[in-house]
Amino acid sequence: MKDDPELQMDDTWSDDSGYSSEENRFRPRSSKFLPILLGIFLVVVLGGGIFYFITRRLAVSDEMVKGKMTAFEQKISDLERQILDLQGKLGTGNPESALLPQLDALVKRVVALEEKQQTAESKAKPAKSSKSTVSTEKQYHIVQKGETLYRISKKYGITKEELLKLNKLSADQSLRYGQKLLVSPGS
Image (cartoon, rainbow, N blue to C red; front, top):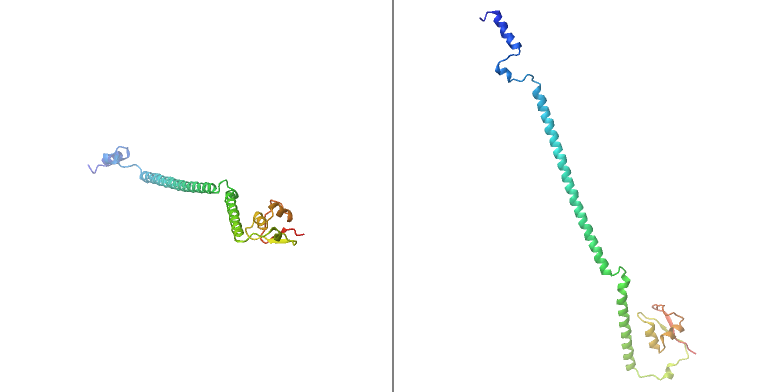
């Protein structure tokens, strides 16, 4: 039978007719189909990986920005608190207003000390007669540091108003160190 040409044709005819044995049924029809599927799979995996890393990087950078913003907000609130503390220490914000009561207290203490010194000097010296204190010459006083019009007027036995009038000064003018004041008009 092998020599029979009809049988040989029949064998070839069965291969071309579309009928195949069971082992041919599971074999893919085209050898190009597998590389295309593999290429699509690789593109999807790479695309997914790129998408994952980009979104993760954005999330990490967002967290860093939020952390930095929180740190800046904390620093700003600390600075605002320090400003409020400094303003509270200054009072109304005007340093002169906080110093004025202290200055007034110091002036009162200086005046009290001057009065004590004058009383101590008057006890130590015998009282002079009123005739010896009257002089015919003009007498001057050089202002020393810390002296006041009140102290100078008491030292020379005249009123503060007379001292202002002799030197043509107004009540609101302040004394300067080394200033020469007329303390007795002379004759």
